[in-house]
Image (cartoon, rainbow, N blue to C red; front, side):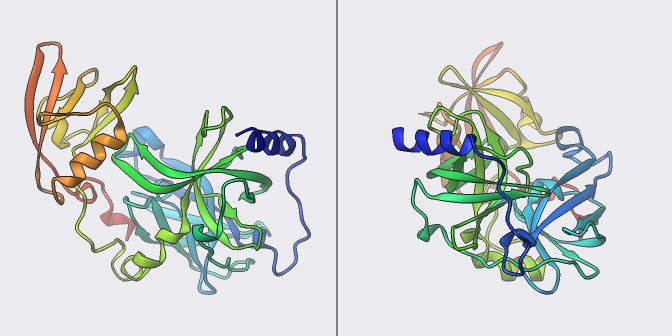
Length: 318
């Protein structure tokens, strides 16, 4: 822990990373992405209707890997390369389970595809390169561990780094050999060393589903059950912050301020625990028994889960 903190503080005292723009420079793969999302999109209120972030060119045909929340439910997408060329793009895929999104540029980009790496070659304490559009810096890998998000999201081997970069959405995380190992998702106040940092989705999750994403726009494995609530961990309890409009939780009468006490008779206090127990019940469509504390007391509620893709308005994106 002390060694990691020392490395991080040393990097914080340095200027942002800068290198010559040689053909083999991994920064040449970093692309800026703009998307426009209709006002009636399910995610318009929470994520906005104009989204800007990063992406990484991963093949010579204009295929760009990014974080999915930048492009899901969009009806127009553009890519901007390092020479400031603005190129229209088309949606290719969105995958909720990994968080990845794919788009394809419809004209040539002045960019060089990144080479894909693997988490297996990384160790905690490694110095990596984090890069979003127009900004790059060295950062330290401080952890490889699970992450649970309030939007029914669970990663087994998320990459945690510090210090953070501000333009993290869709940012690239490169290993020392220049290979892409992660795609930026979040900025966190504490990544486990008492300092802020970023969370990256490991690129290892892409190859197993890439064929499906290119052919169908999504993975074809059975979808995990979606219950449509967004909890917060508050003093050892899971308090509902909001519910998805028209989702299973709202339909069952669960609302903001309710506390999720358990799955059936099994108590839950953390998001990771909650999502694991829900997923263990079966695929989307399975009934999910919740024990809920609300203003009227403790009650048992059975939700009929759904496939989240069928709730999002994705059809216009493909």
